[in-house]
Length: 301
Image (cartoon, rainbow, N blue to C red):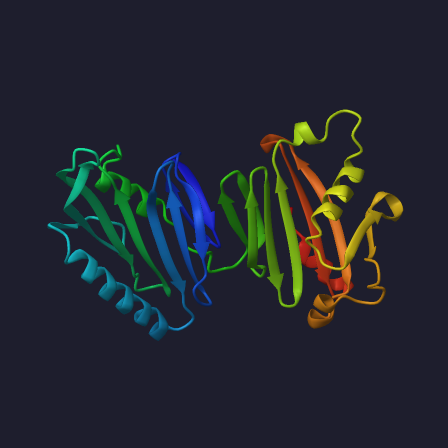
């Protein structure tokens, strides 16, 4: 089993499961889709509400939606002895599907679905979990559900760092930084965070030993990488004073870029570090307003 973590929510899944996509349908809501090598295996939808009325409304809508789905099952089994706050139902579906396209044969295919709802009385966090099991899947549904819900942890009510751990990415970011966007590619993971008007870019690059080979100027390589992507608008990166990475305006943008003007943030802090135990490089660009904003980078990779 491996631990996945996203925006303060952590849980354990089989080793071959990982994040396929995510969506933020509303503020303080998140939907994660987890898959294995072949298909979607898990969907987790949660809302971290500020008011009890919002939490109850989310639970009511989710329960009503699940009831319509459960009603279509051929058999339904209520699962008991779950951790506090959890309730779950195991559904069996027998569907008639074509078994062989050329011979036009039909057969009955059995697949299972587990629906679970997390609605504790002492928390405003609400979750809806769906686990999918096809005929070729080897996991035992009830055992796997119990492991996932037992390992489930919500956001730390006292604040502090938030763990983000998916794919080959693993890092902790202060809870005040909210995820704005991501670009996940093979060997390169970009996460963009916001804190008020400030913006933080974090790249995680794999295979550091293949990038920083003997004789390679690390700082020169990082500058070239940042300039090649043009992810940060209106800025060119260069060597700075005192062995740092500096920056300047790009081309005709001598004064300010419109993106900076909208957020009133005109300064940049650039850094990078190697993570030997994961063979990775983490590159950071922080677009900020005041010098005092740099204290927010404490604990940021």
